[in-house]
Length: 88
Image 1 (cartoon, rainbow, N blue to C red):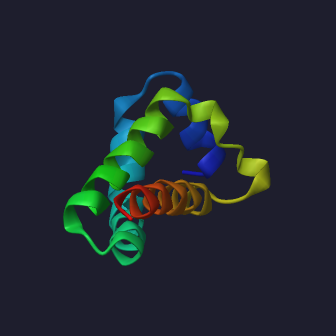
Image 2 (cartoon, rainbow, N blue to C red):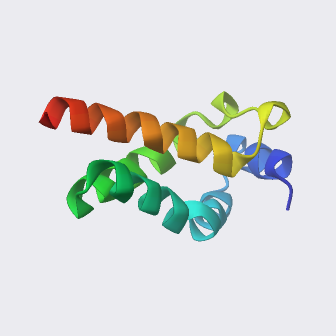
């Protein structure tokens, strides 16, 4: 399934699409978050936040601008950086 098709399914409220996105990209998102934060707890929170964001605002991802994995990783990097900065 293309990233554009996945986005359309998410926008239609298809939970299977979210599960598929998580199955395909969740480990990568978690790995990035773990590398940046150095904390399993923070990495789990970041991963959850990234996929909740995808579910709640699927149209914020635009497949014309890049891959879904790239979008998810960008969100993970941002969320991870916030936690590292706050945790100081």
